[in-house]
Image (cartoon, rainbow, N blue to C red; front, top):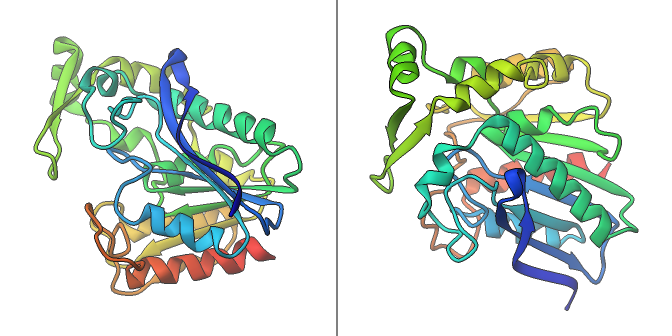
Length: 274
């Protein structure tokens, strides 16, 4: 039995767009709530994230995971990307707004929470670090995090073409969709560079931070995790022989966590328990 069990509940995120979240608070709740944010071209039910949720709920933690409002999912279908127009308008500022809305929602739902922890993977590993001065957050953990947002954008001729055409496309390797990106995403970054400066918020963090990275990550190099750990002043937790998703893939049909992600969860448990 769970004290709270919500699956595919709706919240109103950035630009007033509806999206989905899941929240479980177990009966034996330890008054600690983990809020998990997925990476780029991801969603809350991707791969083994549900098993990661189970891992912590079974150990007394509350767990909330959500879809960012403009990831391309809809409230009718939160898996994969049926709404490419929404995806085209996504930007880092939207994801920051979503996270702040979700933190407020969590505080309203579970007013007796003693600690709220943020957990982010990949792109969201960088985004959670931008909340390092949020007065309601007790700890932050970043999995395979990006260390810099500006370098995610193209430069030179590709950037100029994007500006002139106002849109460009990226192929999703798994779904084979041509994912549209409006130039307004880059304009938003230019306008909000200070608020989106991961290095600044890492160096000026006001909460304990844990950084975990797979040593063989081809998508976000381990050097990015090393840079963040260095800025924060902690030891990077390196997971040998693991790549970007620590052994998970979509779909994940096993009943247990992949070994790499289980190791990650063990490190997170030690961090969140103390």
